[in-house]
Amino acid sequence: MSQLTIYTDGSARGNPGNGGYGAVLQWGEAIKEISQGYRHTTNNRMELMGVIAALQLLTRPGLDITIYTDSAYIVNSIEKKWVFGWVKKGFAGKKNADLWLLLLKEYKKHNIKFVWVKGHATNKWNNRCDQLATSAADSGNLLEDTGYTGED
Image (cartoon, rainbow, N blue to C red; front, top):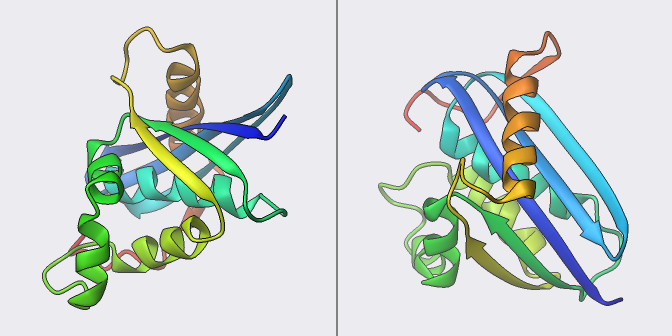
């Protein structure tokens, strides 16, 4: 099976506040769940971190991947190619440049399509990612979001 499906979600308790991401990776019948919580971060940063963390797990380049997320911020930025213009302009006036650069590094390794799904609706895997993200944000195992500058 050559198609990998990834679902991701991010959460922040306050914006900024404690946050977390969750991701579910599906390869055929195999399913892997990941999550992590962070102190003092934002929802958009956690949305990005979910995608990045999932892609960083992959060891083989050139995979066909569909990523489902409820973040219109991510879907529109990639699918409408906005982020590539931001790169050319050095992210002038844009937030989360550190994470966008990490995401693009992983993005270039694969054939990826981003698909928006409605959050907190009937999508089983998006709902599972939301549970993972919020549990991570509420856990005692919080990392520092070292890239957060307070302006994102």
